[in-house]
Length: 191
Image (cartoon, rainbow, N blue to C red; front, top):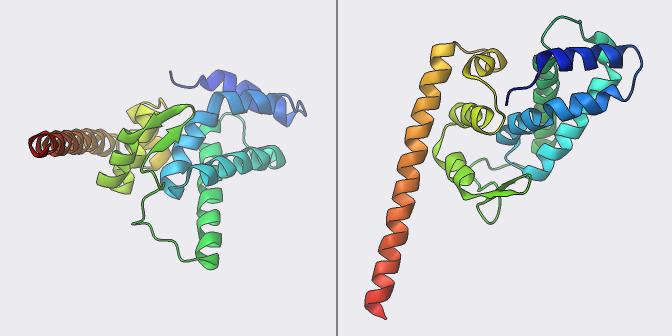
């Protein structure tokens, strides 16, 4: 389900007029998409949650700079992207960050209450832009045209990269299934 742009715009206008309760509506309408957007940038679930929260604090603090009638979602995602990149720069100054490192020690991502080894496989086999597109579409519930707007890419590029990402993930899942079957087949023969 895509976010309701009219409800979001109404909530943004209410927040600009001083209704702090409107921030809760903005959060409900956009938090899943914001989180899905920053997770592949940060490769760290906890940090992505922190950056998501920073995004809404920044939204509240800077609401007067939002121009009504423009894309509230894109405005929020720009704040989120800047916060995520700022956090990465901060972490890089503190400790060298190895992007080749697995995103979690178990190799499993947790999105809400959902444990997903499939997302971990996708993160492993996909280029960053392919992973972003796949996550925004599959988890964030964005349409290809919305993803094209968010990432500033042509619609054809987004649909092609999405299709390629699905093929890569499917092949990786089939390969991991084949490896699992081989390991268990060998295990039975040796027993």
